[in-house]
Image 1 (cartoon, helix red, strand yellow):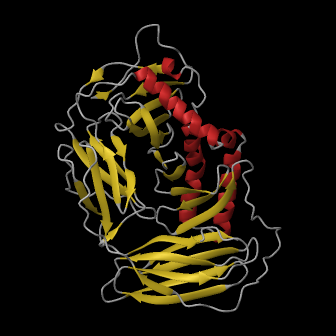
Image 2 (cartoon, helix red, strand yellow):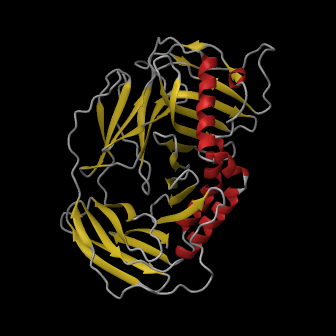
Image 3 (cartoon, helix red, strand yellow):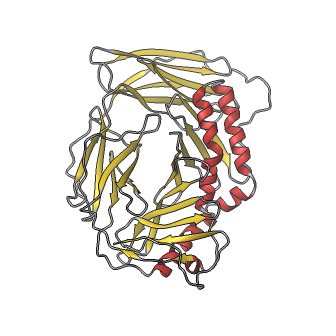
Length: 440
């Protein structure tokens, strides 16, 4: 059973002056509720419910702005902390939390050519590594180490079965390797409620979602509505989101991000694509908590007709896979049958790619060395040359080239720089170039 809704036609419907709420009462439907604001913005919460349909955890928030085509998809972890956001133009923002008020914002352009990491203080907005405006001092050792090549584990067949009879599981692979950092969404045509169901990353390249079952007894929509409001309120008050957006921090964050892009990747189109999504992406985070603290949420909900639908008939299901730095992928000709729960293999193709470029540690302190890593996927069997290089604002440089004939990983150790030194690490091969910048 799926709940759809339209406005009540009696005078008892409260006029919120802000938004209306549609509640999805089917206990097997991962959609919790959808808010429609007066300005046309729509916010859809999805997650996990108990057997009575009461919300337990919010896992995704989908935000549609009236002045921008496409949606902003927020993914939350098991503690309901935002960990990533996929934007309409393919830019991905990742949130790496230090504690409840400081984090590292990682922005990845649609092609993956530009990746920027900046430190954020939700109470103040500014980075602790801003420097004093003077040219950075070069304190690094003269030694230039060679890069290191390592094998990558191959994907292993896994007889993973859905835990629930209405669950759909997708195993995403590329050139025999598990894809572990994708955003996977199941799409339904024609529209079935929200028309899309974000999948949970359950590890090792597997992603799972539920499809609503027909004939399920509905939950008490007022209790369900109140419960979502309670969950959102607890999340937002615990993690400082309300104070974050109440202090105009969004403008500071986007300016800081733009400054880092201009300093490390001047004039590039990919940097412009990141900047174009910054303000709206923070607006989407704001939308997560926009109705937190509202009183008597249930009175704002609207309930209309219960529409009983049978997912086994009259609908087609497709899957969209978004891997940071790569175009969205929808497997052509592959069908998915919710009446036959199983693990579906989704192969996103075999073209050469440089994936998961990162540093460890993610945010090295001044004078702390780090290692840059990148996964080399689908190289030519006759040999693909891959170069990894580093250029620091203190004039430190190093580079090395290796040849790959199979999937592997390239890494390069970089000695620590002085405070406020910026490093840009670049990996290139077969005409593809991907870079990441960090600040000590």
